[in-house]
Length: 445
Image 1 (cartoon, rainbow, N blue to C red):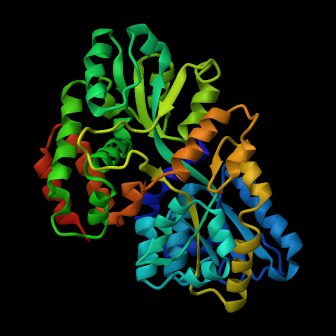
Image 2 (cartoon, helix red, strand yellow):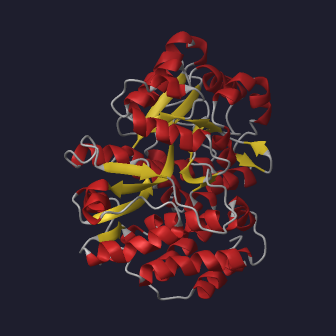
């Protein structure tokens, strides 16, 4: 599976992993707060990273370059596949054997760390390193901020959710890209009558369904609607704007807006993407990370100019700012509160000097990703994917609100309840009100 896709989906399983302390820690090596496997005897702190290219190579080069320039602040580096990391990090943190630097997706998982006093408050670090903070997208800090304090360093690349279009099929039926929800709904019978599925969807994966609600909630209720849910406002899920969004979603399902059998299609296999570039479906709402796979697997679909993209359309009368987006604002590094002072100092030096450099920015661009660095778009000119990169850069850097994916933003228990009920909602097994009632009951769990 594509690394960006893998990274995107790791949070929920990570947050709900069952600790197996004796077994897992035995396989971790010397990876406690002051030492590290694979980092050399001189390492004063540790970092665990995820495997899979191109991210693993960029992360490794970044740490190695820092270590060479700072031999007295060397950080030991260990790499883990996603599934192994999910188990090891939760177990290690629970046993006070965390690496110095903790990879996190922010949001609900980070909130749990903060609640249990497992990570450092980095607000003063950013006060002292204002130049670093100013370098990064403002929107990337939302998922790193708990109770107005910053607990993680945003890094790497950004992946908003994007509306993709197969222009071969649009030309076939003489349609234009929809700019409003009403126009989108009007296209559904047009494509169905032509024997083309309006939307591809890997519904078996559940989180793909969630992206539709994230945007409908935003466009109808504005960013404040989900904020009230995230903050635990009583009955927030049953607010009128919430019920309206849920109703519109089911209207799309009932109109046969999604490909037949969507509930048995998986996103992890990239089957939903294939439906778009093989002309089985006209549109797809999905993460920016899917662009690379469609480019490599879709023949001339991307290179031939048959792929178009935009943000989610306007819902007439809605409260949401059209610049708002949803998805993955960033990746994040937190700092273990249990680490030694020496290890914390080394980690902060790496955050300030080694994590986000011209070299790492260039590397992410060359991988087809948009780094969360203000002004990095000046490096897009002449690249093969210039138009795509600029679109993602503008979407992320210009967002009035960049809402983190709900299953990452919410607590692990609430996130699982959400995914279960979204599956039922798309399957028309429950009503909008029943969905809202179930989520109100799960709120704060």
